[in-house]
Length: 238
Image (cartoon, rainbow, N blue to C red):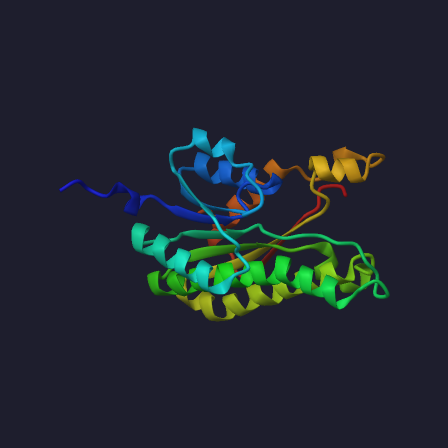
């Protein structure tokens, strides 16, 4: 019988793997020898770069849907018998003061930034607790870390603030069982979209996706995985 070598390769489950940050993070984990399970957004297909990497499997799925995500995670765990890292990159941004914040905007930001993280991470966390190890990595935001300075994007900040609380919940249960959750808090990420939106800005002060990917990988590394209750502020000079 042929030996299943995939069982001994570390597995990273990355949501939003084909976005600006997702591409950098996916490449980083592949370069570090991981097998990557990548989720793609149903309405977007910018995953051509993955064709160069054999150690990937992709799934087009709405990560804000509880039951399909739970089923996918179950299938992945049964196939590989492990999930070492869960990196949750799906999210969205919207400007809006308190006066501008409506029910529709709150619901949109809550779904994109909190439900996407919750429904992806919850089933992965449950399998990690059973296996006795694993790292969860979430993307926070300055507006969610310090709400008094987030008045320019209230719905966004409120939704991101819940991501910090979610990591705390996972750490409260998981730390004693070898499972940790980290939150990476970037400043402005240097993407084509952000450059187009802020053409007069000083791009040199922004954080690059590759640099952010390095920080994310660090939390899952041999050294980084020993940290607990980690919140990394990756601001550069912005």
